View 1 (cartoon, rainbow, N blue to C red):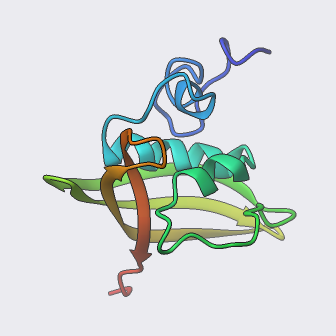
View 2 (cartoon, one colour; view 1 turned 45 degrees about the horizontal axis):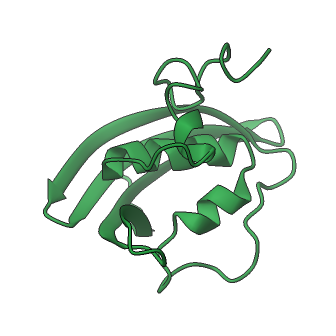
Length: 134
């Protein structure tokens, strides 16, 4: 299978037309929601370089980002997306399995839109909080 024929891990359709275009650098994610979905797909595909490049400099880890061995991502459910100028939040639940056990990652991610090192405005992931279970 080629990128042109595989399904996008984020659930948005064809990978090449969805997150693949951001992963290759052909396009910049136009919204925080698109960036969040592409970051989820990057985690699924173990694309640490993309994760580093889309993480805001002030909170970006210095060490390379790698997916934990044995972790399998199972799906993404976006709960809400709110944008206000150059800041936004995206709440989502990502399901995954590790060591035969299923888990859920419920996060409210913060994003900012700012100029990158080349002066091009783009969205960056800042950080996330984890809502308490009720």
